Image 1 (tube, rainbow, N blue to C red):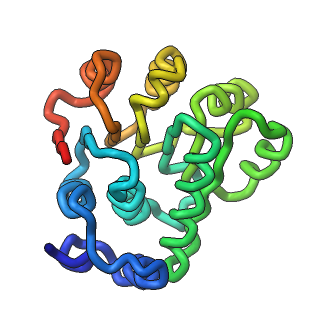
Image 2 (cartoon, rainbow, N blue to C red):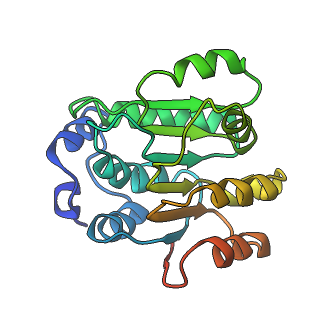
Length: 208
């Protein structure tokens, strides 16, 4: 198995991984990271929860962010508040030794005013549940026009929770996006439809 350095992860991110005692890439990380670092591409990754998907997409995403640009460059959509908070916390830990990359997590069930205030600070990555993100877009509280990378995490869960319409709407807003990365434990018909509608026909497909 290759090391994170051999996969192309930069040394400051590796220092953060070492602090978390993450030394050896999991199977999904070993397969996905080189593809996402080598080219600007869409990807569909199928792997169960707990296989290390957050680092598989999170590390390449962090390497794509320009910390000097004070705009939202990455968007991660998650089905639940818990997953959103968990992803944001992971990204924060990964970037302990890098230039400051700011991640904000927004979700339903919490006061939107607090989240609107938080988004006024420089933010590079937004981790969001679909309904709350649309609410913030409609209030002009978040600007996603500069997003270059969008990630759908646990896409099948978002679908089973009834977020199909919201996902279509959000993906429709992202005119300047360069790559779409979708991760899902299962591939029901609805996910295949999203892949067909919103991702490139040449998207890489990785199944663990």
